[in-house]
Length: 140
Image (cartoon, rainbow, N blue to C red):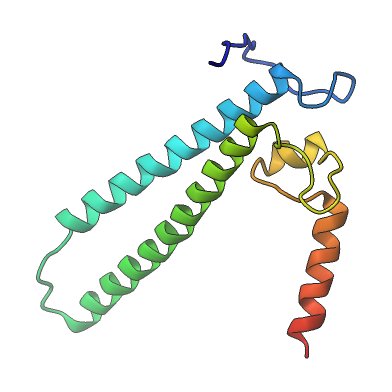
């Protein structure tokens, strides 16, 4: 059972406190949870809009434009669905005590990086190495 940790609204993780202490974990847990809820609410509104928006448009160009808009919206929602899965994985890492540490090196991921991208699983250096290897292989 998790004990509720008090956080003021203006709390930001700082480098001078112990890494991934209860306050930092709670900060990232809330940040991830809020982001997840925001994505899910947007997804619900998209689904409702797609269901309500089905209509017969006689003009071929207007219909094509609307179908293009729908396809773009569905692609965006698919990316967000994948993002929700990554958020869920980050929340599980928090619960397992693995959050904030690089999957490759085991070193702490910087707080600035985690604040900007709370689903990060690699330190900045490991991410850069990964992207360089990916670029080299892609150029083959």
